[in-house]
Image (cartoon, rainbow, N blue to C red; front, side, top):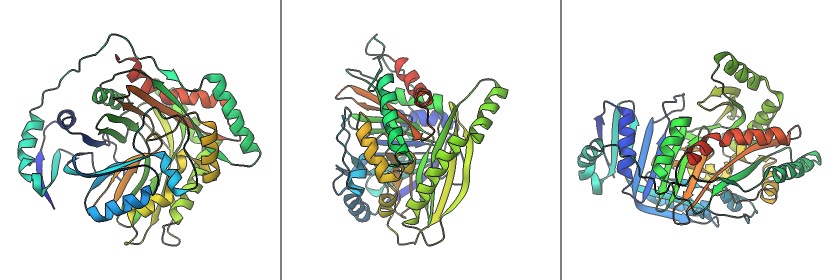
Length: 434
């Protein structure tokens, strides 16, 4: 079904830039970049999927059944995203908050062209109908000269907040009341930053965000007039053979240019009781989610509350693994674990109900997931955080940030953490011209 051909490149970073510029001629693009981060679960240094042969675009109604049918019938690589609002397909929930972005609630496509990077080797996986284009495409990609984007106006982008500071405190206090009353133990509360009547260069925006963050689960996604530029540090779930891996993040601390202070910040995060408690709550939730599909007794916490260092922040990450039967459908596994625990709370359904009540915007792609499913039924999906979303037709730019609210949460500190998480996106957008 697919023809494979490999080439060697001397400068991988330059090739990535050329590859992304070349991809902009297509209506559908998914670019996944690990930015050199390697762990025992890494598969590719980078991967591009483009030029849809077939596609599935739908709302949340019966979305997982539709995706399962599409994936089963396609029997090929598929790439795409699931929005947070597919929770409404999993449970009896709703999403009635404001939506300025208007992305489809689920979108997957079967690409004619897949290009994978592993070290200095570039693998082309093209459908047989276009396999005669492999060598011409490689020549065209490596012949691309870097172009500086033209600015369309001299006016800086003005980022607005959907929830102002006092309103944020009021909503968090309401959430704390529900926690103290025993309705939930923890919930992830998010807020939107946005700009209207704004034009950006999506690829340039992604490139700048990626340069600042260098995150292991970065994504550039283009779907006609809709774009995602993501610097996500978090893996939602991966399937490799019969092994499932989930790596939730809970716990964030800023970086310092001073090495001694930076190490102190890292150690303080590692020993922070509140942050550890948040992380452990989500680990328990993920263990429960994975147990729905796991072979009995196979769910294990292989790493608990380990602090990893990224360009902008230190993050506390846990790793939970399990084993599934060989014939377990990949879409069913995703359905049973969706949405990811790190972006919801515990208990999960009650937390999602309270989130809907207290947040001001529909989350959409934010806190959803982008990734792929292979013909061998393996998959890998990130968590869409630290991300800029753009609807070019609506001229609407948006990014959201959030944090876990627990019984010991301080609204002031949670607000400060949100601003820290927003820093990279704000830096990219407010430094750009609209």
